[in-house]
Image (cartoon, rainbow, N blue to C red; front, side):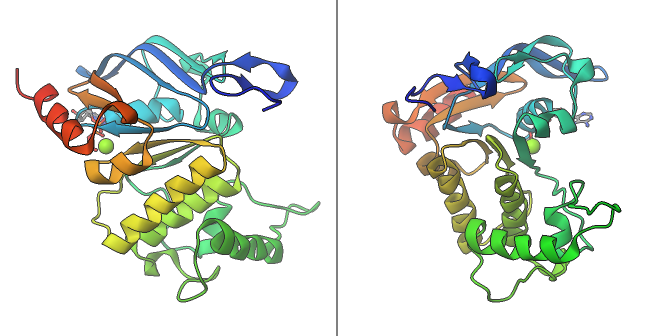
Length: 266
Ligand SMILES: Nc1ncnc2c1ncn2[C@@H]1O[C@H](COP(=O)(O)OP(=O)(O)OP(=O)(O)O)[C@@H](O)[C@H]1O
Ligand SMILES: [Mg+2]
């Protein structure tokens, strides 16, 4: 960071911006359904942002726009200060800008080995175009040990993804995000129920993102999971942001009450 601290980000080439992601007045339609109705949302440097809200609030839609999966219609989006043209933005471009996502609908190849999933779409190849299998497996082992906290029991690089638990699958996707050294990791809570131990693992991953100086957007229905790991919270309801809170200004109980009151049917 060259001696500069929050809220400034110094990018390659010396460009200085104050936000990793900045969205202004973003609208999104699915056909005639208006899923986002003028969203302002930002993520700063080394910040964990918890996004909360009921089913259908627009949380996944919001992050799918950031990750290049869906295009927005009105509004402006800047990533690291670069103005995004929705017609020329894509998942690939988001990867290049250092954004990785762990989707709610898990984007892992279910029938493949763990090591293949780490390098999915971004294979290491030799001059002839062949995949460097040995190197990828060794790297996977390192990712598992150092980034995913797998201790060698059970899963190994050759394990089939479908034999892993829900939490372990989340771990693989997060490990992949960390391996590619994402500046922003977006976690959309898996729909399947995770065991308490698996939830703990996911929360540890989020804490390690913070320790590594990176940022994270964490979406979850479970406020008591989001609360301890987040720096601030954004509450959404029916396509709008209905509340913004800094953790140092609100207790878990108060946040719970707030969410009930801001999402009440009006
Ligand atoms: N691909 C799609 N096509 C049409 N409508 C969609 C699509 N994805 C989402 N929607 C609709 O947009 C609205 C917002 O959905 P979204 O998935 O963003 O909500 P969410 O806050 O992530 O909910 P959940 O907590 O259940 O995951 C909902 O009314 C949903 O039905
Ligand atoms: Mg969702």
